Length: 309
Length: 179
Image 1 (cartoon, chains in turn brown, purple):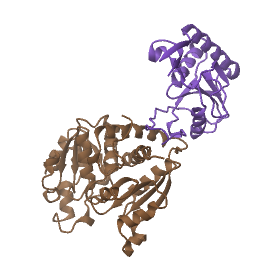
Image 2 (cartoon, helix red, strand yellow):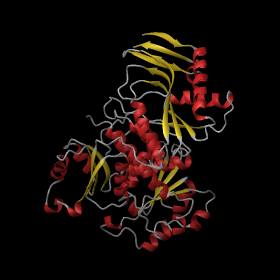
Image 3 (cartoon, rainbow over the protein chains, first blue to last red):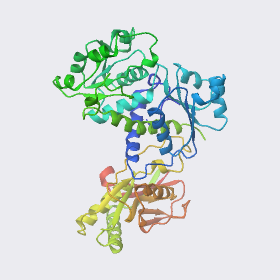
Image 4 (cartoon, chains in turn brown, red):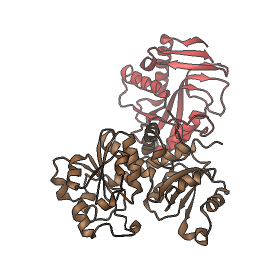
């Protein structure tokens, strides 16, 4: 198996376990590359990639851009705030205009779920979904699993709890798919109002008590409360949320084992996680960011190798 | 598919000793020299030469690295299959060192061309030399020649040169295989 089974990365739902294995093996090599004195390889020198961000992003956008540049691709950036989208142009028109400038690959973040899948049916370029609404964020899930594999040796058989705003989180959904595919046990934990109905149908368990969830797990992935996606009030107050679902040093020390703490960023310090935890050796938050570049290089490299000359 | 033996174990052994001696002639105690085995198949030869230098010629502290050239190859997207990478492992500084590339078969020269670009990511070597066990004459696509060669071969294009090592295939030998 030396080739991805897909031509686009639209979501973890559409890929296989061997795709993930191939991405991780390739990412291992790129991780070595980005720790060299010269952190760049010439593989994609004849590929042009457009980063289309119809929604705000700091980390993901920088990470993709860096990954593309380390592979020597030509990069063009687009953000909706400063574009003709505001003038009423449709998604297909916007993208086709960009593609007519000879672009080979599109990295897209969009507020609407399914935007990537929709686009893949209408345009002739390889697409990477960098987050579509509350649906999927596949590269985040891949880098999360990669970071677990790096810290604990393997993902299979590990107990992972995803804590927080599961309802509005694309990171949660992609992580659930990725972790289940690799044979991990997954629980979700958070206020009942922020846990989607029928989540059990994805093969995960719901645990409403944070302490019990932490006691059970090897890894806790702490999600951010996405205030910007909340149309109504899902919990009484931020302070109450923190008391029930925030992780602090005291809580972690009361457990009878040391667990790994992850966070996809951006962190609301003092809400879902306190600073002493975020900055401790138990947290692999900055490893996740570094691995993000290597994993994205692997995804881009493997997809680009399927673009015919 | 037919194959004929080009070199047997004894001949391989004689050649490896000669190559080791030629290296010593030019690099003395190897303090300013590093050996780089080109992945995947050059690594076996490189490991063997290092062991020979240490065990038979008493040279210690030889630095040997493995260099993978996959991401530097010029045929990305030009072959049907995705190019699969191997491990690069260079835990020393290449800056200002004399670098010796080691590969089993020198054919078109394109791998070495890629290796010359790849090694620059680790610093600027003082000089780069090339050692190969088999030099396939008349088949070069680029102006690249070895500094140390085991045996020169005139193999035609539908022939393949196959190098086996005790470490991976149970015997030291070189075959010319008719495809």
